[in-house]
Length: 432
Image (cartoon, rainbow, N blue to C red; front, side, top):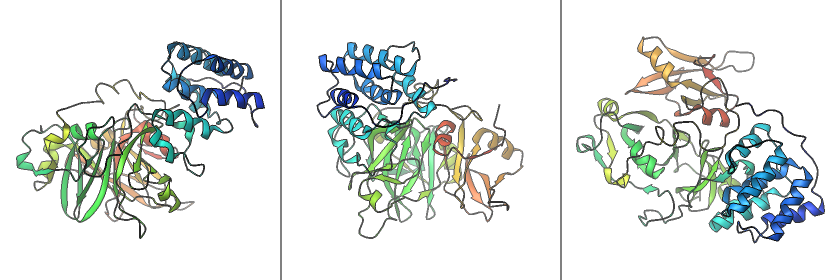
């Protein structure tokens, strides 16, 4: 999408009048309603022409429950961005423009953002620390509440309920799972386990143990990304993190948190970005996850275990073919045009820190001919390491030049490329 040229962007502090207007609109008593004070504030913001304030307008619009306020907010955003939106509830369009133009946040934005979001979920309050390594412009409500239930709880909640220490069976007992059902396969310490996508689309988070290791496995349905983070490899004195879904998103990627410390973690990198774990510099180490089908995984790993059917709670969604069929449903700004937004890639970070993405369909096609799939990672002026993709039970793994398995996972292209904008791509020219 062509977002055109951004309007002139202001700099420097807000005037006392504008600070007062922001306080009136997004102060500590924010409740999403519209009164005379809010109308005056919106008029002042509109008159200022300060496009930075469109971030606050968008944040309020995301949660506004009053139709009159929604219409008025949309009008203010149109004037600030000098853009006409066809939809009167165009929160996503507004954010896409702001992200694509990289409009800076207004002064004192953290306070306004906190007031707006914690009015919806007060338990988010600990996340909003000034030292947090979070671009708060890109954070939005994902439509669900926070999962702060105790470890092992099966209590209902207005959240996406994680599974702790899930029940499993052997492959022979999993008669409920069709051969063509998508699973996320994991091998640790010589033990294999399959996590059916049917379950992960409902639960989105599993805290589990396998092969003598403890880990969390989040699945972001919006990014098509299942990742595994070891939770038993943290600084001394730190209790094993229990990963949960916060209900917040960052550029269409779920934000997870540790239940024990209420530390936010970047779900794509495993880095703690807010809270006590951030203070300790915690970055959870990743492990390889293979996306394949149950029939292929069972054939490759006949001794595999698999999560039990009851964990799906009687549901069998396919968000990729329904909700997400027309592309990302949350704002992402511009998408790297080397691939289509929802193309599948296998992403891996090389030892020298360089991200690499392999187009899954193209890689499988080449491997089927018997030819290799690999890419050389530049390291300054010298040739660097080699990352190769190999077949594994109908899916793909990444290995280094010595054949050692790398911590790779599959994701939609838009997600991988926005978190790793300098990624190398195989094939280099993309796929038409």
